[in-house]
Each structure stands twice: as C-alpha cells, then as structure tokens.
Image (cartoon, rainbow, N blue to C red; front, side):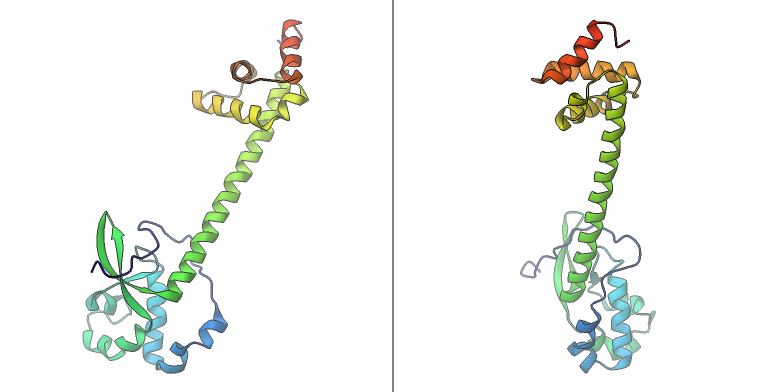
Length: 210
C-alpha cells in the first residue's frame, strides 16, 4: 500500500454547500461519455457526487459492498458487479491519511481537480470575508480612537491601530473611551511614534481629553 500515491486533500475538510465546478465541455468530450454505457455511466456520475461528500473529500472507499451502497444498489453486489468497471472508469487506488493512519481509498484525477478547485474558492471566500470584517473593525476603532482624543495622524497609522486592536482583544476589553485611551497609552510606550501621538498626549495634558 505504501507504493500508492498519497491523496493530496487532507482528511476532515468539507465542501460548503452543494456545488463543485462543472466543466461540461470537458465532460462531454471525455472517453467516459464516449465508451461507458448508460447504466454504468449513471452509476459513475452518482459516485462522483458521493465522493464530494466523503472523507477525504473527493475519494471513494475501496470496498465493493460500500461502493454498491453508495451507487444505489444497496446490497445487490451482482447488480453492482455488472456496472462496476464502467462506473469506476478513471478511479485509481491511493492512500489517504485519516486519523494518523494510511487508509486505502480510490481517487479520480478529474474529481480531485474539481474538489481542489472548490476548496480553493472556499478558502478565498473565507479570507475575503475575514478581511472585510477586519477592515470594518479597524474603521470602527479609528472612530473610537478619535473620540478618545487621538489625532488623524495616529488613526491613519495601520500598525498603531492594529496594535491597539490586538491589545483590546487580548485583554478582553470593551471599547469604552477609557479602555481605548489606556490601550493607546500602552501601545504608545512600545512605538516610536510621530507627532500624531504627541498631539494626543499634549491634548490629555492640557485637559482637552477627559
């Protein structure tokens, strides 16, 4: 088994929703469509869909009883055997790491490609969502910092705003004016700041910032 290729998708990953890319021209011009009969082809398409919900995603078990069940034949292994060769067109043995053990599975090059593509899009969507949330949080914090007496120069410094946000999060503090001021004071001690913070500190010393 150790001479089999290692499946490239980690165990435990799941596809979100019920969509994967459909390269329909590639499918229609494939040898699968040209050579596999309808009964086996229908079972094959079912197995492609089943594979998208397996673990690791995109693989199938290398076991005829399980494959028959997944393809819709229940326990009728004879009926499964009649379509098996065509239904498994393009599937090859591989090994997947599951719970720190190497397990023999079946993988299909095209199914692996579309699953990997879908996972990559999911990751891009997650990163964009997190980046959007982070931008919103930074914008809100800048406003709060200005309310607490910071100058525009301070709130324009991405590194300073990020440091204040990290301090507030790490301490589990609400964004009250007092907490934001204390966080800015703390961060200022660790930064070689420009006149922006000097403006803030001067304002506090003059009593303009409560």
